[in-house]
Image 1: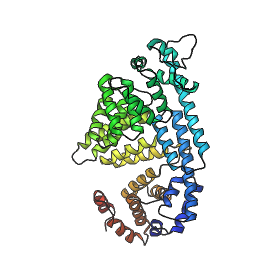
Image 2: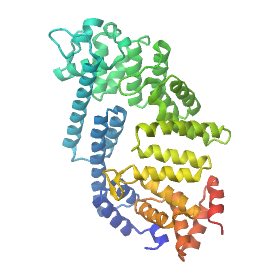
Image 3: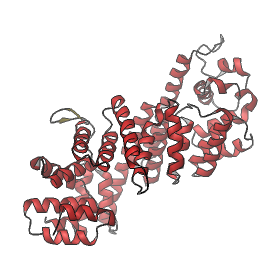
Image 4: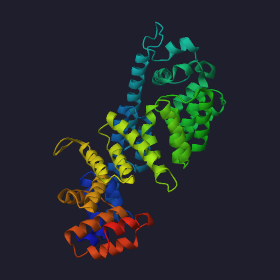
Length: 436
């Protein structure tokens, strides 16, 4: 298939490519390959691809649950439910059940390490009676025994300085918190609204419920109120300050997010490092920003993260972008190579995590632009092209670099097509590396 045919395949070609991608378990690429095609054959392949995506997301749900990353769990569970077109109900139920079990085990472990004061009839503190013996008793709700055990573990994970507020809040707060844990933020938010604005734990749980309901404004209001009452806290699942900074960034208040993250970092909140690096890099792209200091701050945060998590390819990839923005091309290439090596246990033997196609594309592009490591560059470019379902400008630009290197007769036409669709911020790059 020629370069132009690769960029503009027929519907039959796309369906065939999608089938092959499904066989390779590259379900997202298969689904995107079928975008805009309406036929029974395409719909059949699309259903297989989406069911595959559901299963991949459920695998991610369990993986993140085992790692204790509740926000990631909810994200992938929501994706799985949105993609589900019927037939996988039992698998969804099994995943939810496994998540509940893992959370319960994690909270039990936290309760043990916290060493709460216990009473004889509840030696592990599983029902919350141990902690409530210190802080005042909440009457039992109609929750089943599993919910009662979960409530005790939730209580154990709250900051010790805030637990005493539970006795004032009563069973309404207990029930609302369990509703939120059980996937009913609507019920939780309604009940928590009745408890006022002066209790830190109410602000925390209500912010989580509001965010789950798609209301960032209310979530921000409650997180800011929490900060006013007791300062930001290391709450179960996520630091409240990091959550506030993340939501601010998501709705476009990047400067506020950066300021808050800077304060959290100064206060020693290590959970803020990844978001701080992302926000710093985003701000550095603004023409009026002090980009050098922002990029230096992002690099420092990423270096800290990579010391603790050397296998996280996302950290390597962002580090390369930070360095490239500062004009450090060779260090950027080194970061990308490290990102590709992160999935491998030994040369030529990759683990369960496949190489990131975006890293392959970016590294191949840099090598081809600078005419370095040409054999390696073309190998990476080929691997990256195999993973592309809908080419964006960067994919077409890489194709043009490859075409020029091979002396492909389609190269001139490809470059002209690329020039016509080049965004303003990429014009200088195109003129420098693919001059007419």
